[in-house]
Length: 292
Length: 185
Image (cartoon, rainbow over all chains, first blue to last red; front, side):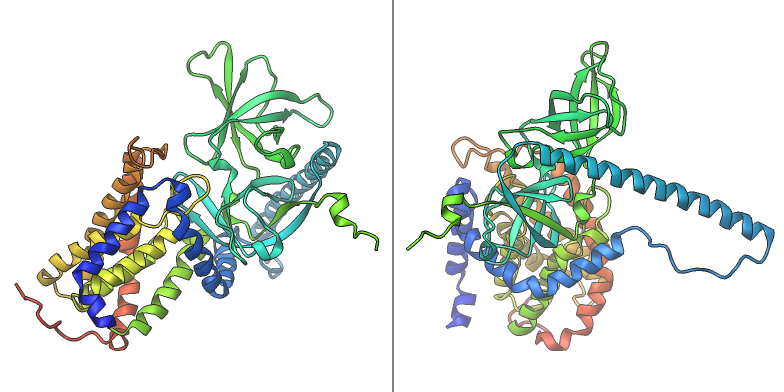
């Protein structure tokens, strides 16, 4: 039976025709088959994919400092060690500054009125770079009440949003760098200065950064924090970090009036091990059991 | 062809394909395509009737990985059709090459992958037509082809070591030395 099917060119042509039609249907109809197959396949490969991904992140990550070396034998070695120690101290100071900034951001997030959500930690099991967009696959799904549209964060940074299809134990997250519509953002110049509001960030041409065109007289410097303030697209992620201003260039059409901010995500969104899915809290009336 | 061996190898390659991204992607996220190497290996060696089905299966699996369509939905078809075109190409070309050579695999990866990439890009581009799905991708076709060319080059490099591995496991695959009915020229 199977052999006859394999040798039948009519069956092959029929399958190819069905696929051709399916690939030209609107997403709503064309993705029905994918909605069944994808969660099944994701579930099947989860045991292998999870450890391999962790290993891959380890391999692709920065070099970790090794253990203590032998004591320096010559003055040159001592000088080298001293220089290296100065560099490490500098790195630690930067790290402390980053932690302080993260703390301030988290305090800022708490102050903003936003829908109540409960973060659910999820492990990243795969990253797929499909050209115009990058998608992370998580090990959480409908069993953990993860649904399409939920926002995904890493510490104080926005990562992206859960998209369909969501399987029982897997969910895809489209990174925020794929978001085509503009996003309202707020640029913080420093802890003691008033932030600039009502700035619109657009997806950059490279698909990895955002750009924002602002007036030249705004005193923004590279390194300034860019916070999400969009109540339409990411209402539950307002106040979280979208990225930092990496560079400021002239706005080509009108360089005397405007400047362009190049905003890069604060974390490497393609090499995350663990993220948090923001699940909306159920209404208070639904959460409390009714009295008998 | 032994379908159990094919299934296990496909499972491992599919799991590694996306999980290894952070370790081996270069430049603008270009990474090799292990399933393409497997498809070409099967395409070069297996029975004629089996090749389209095996490559179609691999194409469907690739469609299940996140594609270039921004937003929700997984469209099954573009890669599957691309690999079906690749199957046709490999069946035409395989009689001209020495099938058990790793270098054949490398060259065929480039040729077959090129066919598959062209068809896949075309199918995605057609979605933008108003009387079809009317969902333009908002991408540059030239850029996508350039990206796929980079992926093919990378895949061809990876095909060298993987080809040795697959070649060493040839006994497990149950390929006959010369498929019945196959012409030499």
